[in-house]
Amino acid sequence: MDGTEHGIGQPQMREELSPEQLLRVIFEYTAKIANERSVDRVLMLMADMGREMIAADRCTVWLVDRKRNELWTKVAHGVDELRIPLGSGLVGHAVATGEQIFIDDAYNNAEYEEALATGARLTDRMTGYRTKAIMVIPFRNNEGEITGCYQAINKMTPAGVFSAKDMEILTLAASYSGKSLESAMLTQEIEETQKEIIMTMGEIGEMRSKETGNHVKRVAEYSYLIARGYGMSEDEAELLKLASPMHDIGKVAIPDEVLNKPGKLTDEQYELMKSHTVIGYNLLNKSNRRILKAAAIVAHEHHEKWNGEGYPRGIRGEEIHIYGRITAIADVFDALGSDRVYKKAWELDRIINLFKEERGRHFDPRLVDVMIEVLPEMLKIRDKYADLA
Ligand code: C2E
Ligand code: SIN
Ligand code: SIN
Ligand code: SIN
Ligand code: FE
Ligand code: FE
Image (cartoon, rainbow, N blue to C red):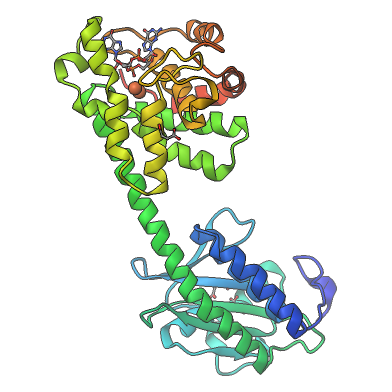
């Protein structure tokens, strides 16, 4: 093998980890993995952990997708998932049979000749990489079903081949992976279901008030943009994006003749209308789920004003939760730009003027500044989720 021929840069020679270094790697990664709720990121952390533990050049964690009969993985820096048919290649074989595979030289191995010729060696021809040593270890979930495998390629120590000890170490990582991935997938599934329920709830609220379902989508996206522009973390901004569509859920309890009244509301009707904040809060605050807790705050506080003249409680300034202050801006921006039964949509200039006038009155002044900064992106969202006339 001539190192200069490698298409993907010079592979780094490494040393075998000492037991102490190995432990450190395990502690470091298991701590990260335990805190991670995204399956994609768990996959990548596990691959990195495996690669470091056994000084492999590459390590991939493949997962079985029974619905599509495929194996898939997420590669670092890669935008997309990688998918292969369930039966194909060495990884397919390992998953189908439950066998661990251990190859010293991919170009000189009779047992897996066909899988290598159509898998590793074919890929090498396309990428200029040279696969030598390969190890594949399937793993199982808590029910004992095979749910994926670890695949390690090329040992980067002078020995150049994987040892029995490497297999032992990767088997350990694999058994841990099977369990962590299962719980990450369950969490993700629960969160996906929650997201759907939440969007649907938000849309039900809007349907009653004859606003299109796109109102909640736009408010969600605007809230996210403002939250990020304000410096909120990706994780929390994402949470707000999921919660903000429910800001008006309490309107489900408002009678039609008030909710859809074409003209101006009487004082009494407006008082009734204001109760949608408390009604929404009471619907949502029963749950302990993170998203619903955030949604309860948003429902409760999206009509509070920075100067204390809002409702239902008349709280002011930073007494109003940041989620409420952000959604207030997103909601009014969208309400003003849309036709309602009681009013026509406003021109953008007029909307921006209102925000400048209400900066420090209705709205948190810092957040108005952020809104002006992210306005170009908000306008893209407005076009993307425009209401059909
Ligand atoms: P919405 O239509 O989603 O409006 C949300 C908020 O956007 C309003 O909260 C208000 O802050 C702002 N907004 C909307 N349209 C205008 C406008 O023409 N001028 C100004 N300056 N601000 C506007 P608000 O006022 O607390 O109202 C809460 C909800 O009560 C509204 O939600 C809507 O469902 C209802 N509502 C308010 N006024 C009327 C009305 O005159 N007639 C009817 N039928 N419903 C109304
Ligand atoms: C295969 O394993 O057969 C294809 C996937 C790859 O070579 O990376
Ligand atoms: C395989 O053929 O499944 C393993 C080697 C590779 O293609 O990366
Ligand atoms: C609420 O009172 O609206 C929820 C609690 C909070 O604001 O932190
Ligand atoms: Fe509202
Ligand atoms: Fe709204």
